[in-house]
Amino acid sequence: MDGMKTAIGLMSGTSMDGIDVALLRTDGQGRVERGAFLGVAYEPAFREKLKQALQDATAIRERAERPGTLTAVERELTERHAVAIRDFLRQNDLSASDIHVIGFHGQTVLHRPDEALTVQLGDGQRLADLTGIAVVSDMRANDMVHGGQGAPLVPAYHAALAEGLVVPERPVCFVNIGGISNLTFIGRDGALMAFDSGPGNNLIDQWVEAQAGIPFDQGGMIASEGQVMAALAESYLASPFFTAETRRSLDRNDFLPPRGDQAELADGARTLAYVAAAAIMTSAGHLPEAPALYVICGGGRLNAVLMADLARLAGERGAKVVSAEDVSLDGDAMEAEAWAYLAVRAMQGLPLTFPNTTGTSAPVSGGRITTPQKIG
Ligand SMILES: Nc1ncnc2c1ncn2[C@@H]1O[C@H](COP(=O)(O)OP(=O)(O)OP(=O)(O)O)[C@@H](O)[C@H]1O
Ligand SMILES: CC(=O)N[C@H]1[C@@H]2OC[C@@H](O2)[C@@H](O)[C@@H]1O[C@H](C)C(=O)O
Image 1 (tube, helix red, strand yellow):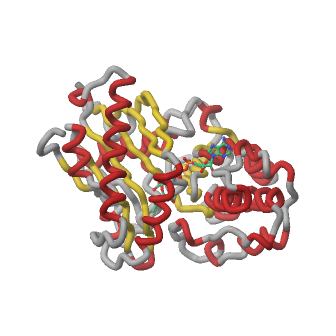
Image 2 (cartoon, protein in one colour):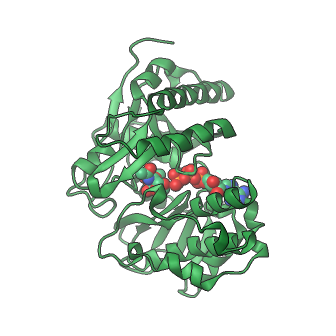
């Protein structure tokens, strides 16, 4: 009926905190019906394997290479995604035959847009075999073949969501504050512009992990006890990333956390929360028009200190900041939903990326489509 497909999106983001699973019904264009969501956390031992995989990936020169632990980690990662799908289907009383396609992001272990090299671990064929469902994987590769940055890909979905947005303010800007942050501007006339906007939670996570052995600053509680260290903040915000003529997508390691002797725990967390907020607003300066509304998704929206900085900085420019939930969206599920949406578009050969989102030379589709060869 009416071209609507049922898809599942799978996201394992740069924070490496787990697998997000989201259900979406869509026609791959303007019609979007959001469904159930499941977050499956990685236990610390698997996060350590992913960290090792990031190290091993630095030796990759060609995207199919899997040096060191990468073959084993890719296999385990794929199997974990299959288990997440199985649990998700069971919890929602669904079976594999209810799902047309899975959009599988995998885990980015290397991203060098200047060399047109981006590597996401995750075996689409094996996931299709394990789940019995068609899989679209590797959705960043074709964009790079066409001169794009390989990220961000979520803007096509943001644009579809903007059509149904329950508030009147325009232009609107969706901001994802994950490990890295990215933003999508949607103008009054629907014009789209998007790019990675700077470090998000990654620096905060790495800082509190190194200084206090905890994985993230819950609610921004640690930051709330510190002071912004102006010189340290400036050392991040002075990066040529923010002033370059063209927008560039980011690798996890493009910005590094402070050294232990540069700050106390709370001041470091406070400064990095400010940096995350200021990075977004500085990058937003490259948009064609100042947004009237910022809709924030991703884990960073749960850091109250970061959000207060963002609200203040946006307020100074006459704009409002809301969380995805304030406009009846789900800030945790959005990227996984986007991968479901993109998978449906890929099946239809529709563009995933555009000159104004990744810098690709023309709107391009992408993804590798694999269908189940065997079950189990
Ligand atoms: N309750 C919370 N309080 C503060 N920060 C939080 C909270 N929950 C999650 N976060 C932050 O959000 C991060 C996860 O965010 P998210 O899942 O959006 O990132 P990701 O999808 O892995 O990254 P990316 O979008 O870059 O691929 C965590 O690593 C943590 O820093
Ligand atoms: C190479 C890669 O995995 N990039 C991610 C990362 O995490 C956030 C930001 O950097 C974004 O551009 C991208 O993911 C989102 C989901 C995207 O492509 O839209």
